[in-house]
Length: 318
Image (cartoon, rainbow, N blue to C red; front, side, top):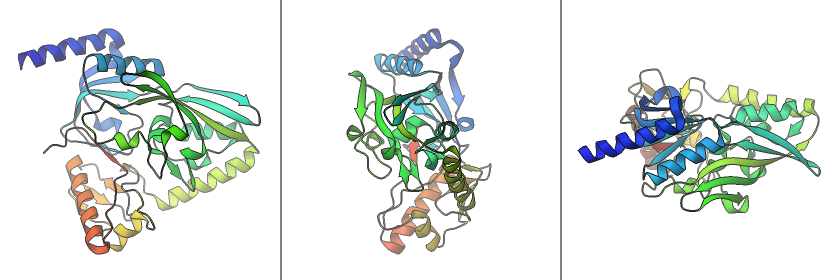
């Protein structure tokens, strides 16, 4: 125990020396996540650039410390017990545009808010990312999860991703390398493997086509209005389950009679059954119990085993 404490103290000091006030210990995570639940980060660092992000994971890897990257805090459920090791909040937001033939290429650091990037592109008359208006999360999270909406997804936009890979350093991944499927990628499939250090997206090159700003804005406004009408506000993680083949997860949960179903301070939205809400008093365990209820009920009623879109983060071994 003494040895572990000594190693922890020495490691924390190395991060404090390297990053100053951007590094803290024993920090509550709930205020950084859209669900507003979860315990504390054993160590926490705010990375303000892709260089910071790379430096942090290299230092963690050298010290044999597990790391968890959190972007916008959506699409994750953090355990009430918190997260061991280092939690890096990715705030790397630098964006650059360049022309390439008939297209415009945007290089965006992975902590850039996806919806903000979509609005930036629209203001420049660049089409292709309108689907992302109102979509929570960051560019890095979207690259990993092949985020999408309204018939569009990252598969339509990504040219390449610049990635730091344990043991290999910085590499570039082409669109083909990402092995995209519906809400899935070669990186996403690593989730749940506790024994493998993850690859980290540093930035992404996205392609867009110039067009009429008014037309692009009108399309984005239409998508945004649909989102507001169909999805609830408040403390939620986003879509809880992926849509099974030939089904909508929300339809299955609703047809199973679970709209409004409650576990503690968490409930299934009356507006859209694939969104689970925190009324301000929920714990992460309340939400996990709600997930289990929906999963088992849908399987028992329809024989469909739904797959989580949200990732469980932290210490869930209890």
